[in-house]
Length: 395
Image 1 (cartoon, rainbow, N blue to C red):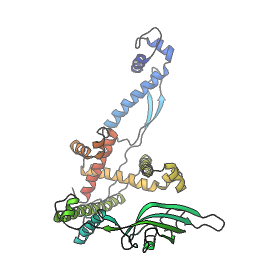
Image 2 (tube, rainbow, N blue to C red; image 1 turned 60 degrees about the vertical axis):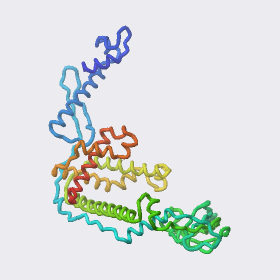
Image 3 (spheres, rainbow, N blue to C red; image 1 turned 180 degrees about the vertical axis):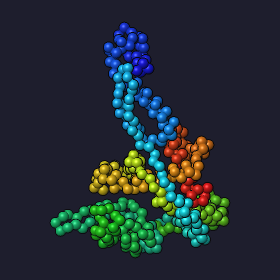
């Protein structure tokens, strides 16, 4: 209480006294004394809590719940602190997962398929005065009339204005591109098409009358496959292009195989381990999952409230639906923690600094990754990856 009084007295405005110079009796007569004891108790509890957790090597999972049992002048301070701690994990034979990183080497056909896609991307569109055919690109306006029940008016939707539609490609509406073969610029065609099951709920399975007006037709002219094309994509020649594509495909195949082996190894480690999952960790994982969904919803240009309305769910129902998945994620974190401790897997400050330097966010905003919480999360992610790499033999 004396320490709190000194701090508060320096901030107090008491007539006749400079800040920090009022006697305690005068201060208490003006502002009361109870808050001095309460704040003093909180300071003492904070200091004692840190000392106890460090001395006993307790790993709290959340802020403690404080209950003051006795707080009176001249008597001992008595408090009760309740905190969720990291539970013990009974690890199984986590090394017996049997998964191996077996990447499939890219074939010549794979390489040529990627290069063909690159040529498509650099294709030139040349207007033609003939009927649409092959892989032509049409500039179109598309309106759709959705048939409704007998007693309800039809709905009209605008699907495109001066949109590009390429023949020979699959679109969300089956039959749309194929139905335009043979048209000329300035012509119009009506198609009866059915919306597939993966469209919006209010459209799936319904039949629509698609009115398509073609304003122009262009043919795709691919660039020749030669050293000149390689130079347009930043490489010296065609040989260097094929090598770069093959290396990139091999890199992707390795990481795909690594991720598959990692999933198997972690699933085995979790399934063969036993641990009581604290509720606070489940709720924390649910917070992360819901937060990530909210970010994706915002990035799509809509709102979280509209997303819930379309799903016909409350946020509470979403959290309950994901609870089992959140519990699995929480258990995975606990199991990886236990394996890291047993195997002595750590992340050094040098490794963390190097990772931070390579993070795009840090390059955009050097201050963004100075938060201790953000750095701790990054270090944990790095450590978990090192644990999984050790499990699948990549350490």
